[in-house]
Image (tube, rainbow, N blue to C red; front, side, top):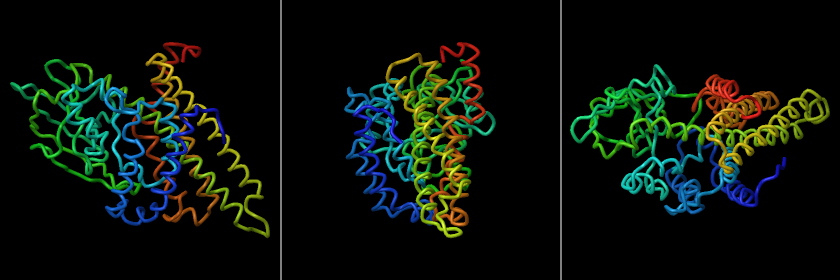
Length: 386
């Protein structure tokens, strides 16, 4: 299924596909049957190769030694990494452009550039049990005390917390009634894991619950100025929602390919399963929805590259996440059905994606939240301006 992309995007697509096929995909079942964990030498090899290929620097400005790839090329790369289950592509950290706008030079040197070099990994202490990902209703606090801030609050679903070196912690300053971001080192006194829930997917990266109790950090760990935290989190959300769309396109493509190959080989009543019209309908619907999803995702990426209005981009990235994540879930469901009993086995790619893709309709804002964002933009700007 070809769509028109730049030569640069095609270049990175080929690099990422080779990496996914040779370094990651062969270890999916092994990871699935071992709590998502691969032997350390394999994980280290995969991380080393990703760094060599430049994956940790794709969104880093050239002024800081990065590649500063167009968003179209980044989507092409992550689409191919999305073909792999068990989050095996999470073996490397990703320094993002917004971090260089948000952080001071000393913070960039201490935290962000080490991410680009593969020396540090981050995690996000944002979500809370009550407001969830509603950043306007955060309950965690950051109180000034001399040259320090004192952080308090409970944070849920801190993805990769068990593998991270530092947190992005978001809380509210009570006196200012405003939000703020902090960089907090793992191991700082007062940080405690209170739960490590088991989830449907089988990832080496966990999603613990953390309690921050009177965690003291220097004022120099504060990111930006009062009110900046919301803007930077919106930048992060736009990036992540677009890349969720890219990964879901890759996952759907692999599912269609695997289901089609099986249907061609499986013989029922003396003919290949693929000749059954109801199977053809499922494959046709899946291919059609994937085509629409890829067009939407790549056009949103190009809109970012064109520098279009950030508020319009915010709603477009929400459209991508909404439609493409739900598309991938439908494709996964059909693939399980085509595989039949085999599709219910954990060794089968359809079964793994059936579980793993479900969360893409939830994290970084649920499908319902995306619909609200889209509707508000539509009512405010009208259809022609979206």
